[in-house]
Image (cartoon, rainbow, N blue to C red):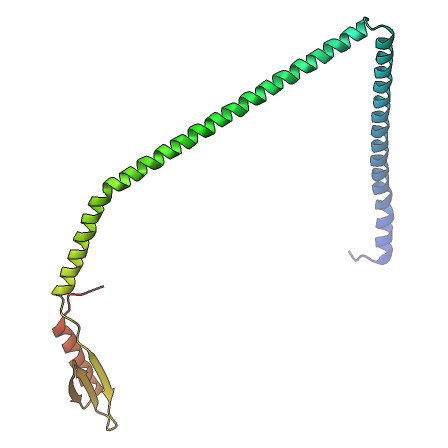
Length: 189
């Protein structure tokens, strides 16, 4: 279906009243709610004023006694709340102190264990160093191999300062491979 401007206008006119009615309804609901809240607050203020006037006229009347009881109950409730908060704070402080003491004790125990293991670690490090030194001493050094090409096309190979010449690169490579195999170093990384 193709939407022409006329179809769009008709659809817009059909939908607009529904959304407008809903927004109007929401606004009315909000206004009613606010009016109800204002009326409730006004009634409460009137009742409080009437009770205050009654207490002023009859200081020993029922309203005065009820107000004193309510004040005492609020005071007792505040005292209980304050006591509970102080107990919770003291419990939290005690728990924090206990946790700090346990952490300090664990730290001291770990330091003592580390110190106790120091001689064993030193022996292990010395044994490892001795094994590495022995391994290095037992190995033959690898030969120094340098290859080069001369202007006439022949290949020169220098092994630990001794120069050899080969007419082809294949022969030179074979010689280098033989030198490396003959050396067979025990050092491997």
